[in-house]
Figure 1 (cartoon, rainbow, N blue to C red):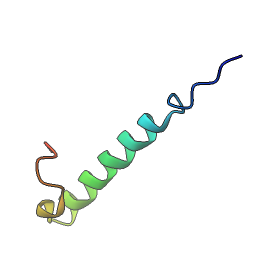
Figure 2 (tube, helix red, strand yellow; figure 1 turned 90 degrees about the vertical axis):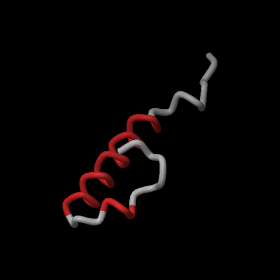
Figure 3 (spheres, rainbow, N blue to C red; figure 1 turned 60 degrees about the horizontal axis):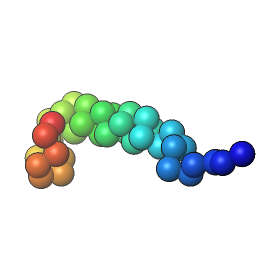
Length: 40
């Protein structure tokens, strides 16, 4: 059996965390705190 550590599901967790961060900064009306060039 071969286990590929690069397919650990972190992409899904990171995508959710990014979305929550964007929503938070927009909710507090400070989108300028988002990373530059993030495309949000």
